[in-house]
Amino acid sequence: MEEYLVQKNTPCVECQGSGYISNPLWLDFMEKYPPGALRSMSAEEYKLLLLTYKLVGEPEKLTCNACKGSGDFIILVGIEDVPMVQDILKRLAKLEEDKGKKTISAAKDSVAAKNDDIQKSYEDEFNEKFGLK
Image (spheres, rainbow, N blue to C red):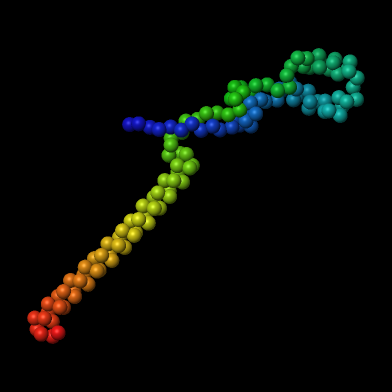
């Protein structure tokens, strides 16, 4: 059996689609030393602090391991799981339902008309046979 699949791109939940996450070393450092505290330090004190925390040359952002930096995931889903296709299928089902109702209604009208024609034919034949017309 053939199966058709559609590519679905979904944002990475780890990096919210950016492809990068904050470096935990820098997060720890920033938690201990908020920006206000750093502004009051001299350049030498700041460099010493960076060396102490081994942050020299360490990037503030790292490539997200979950999505490998792409920011999203590609997932293959069945075509029937695509929202637009689901909407189209619902609309088609509604059209078929409406068409079926119209067909049944038209068939009933047709049968009723034939019954009326048969009834009139019998009445005409009866009236003619017994001279009632």
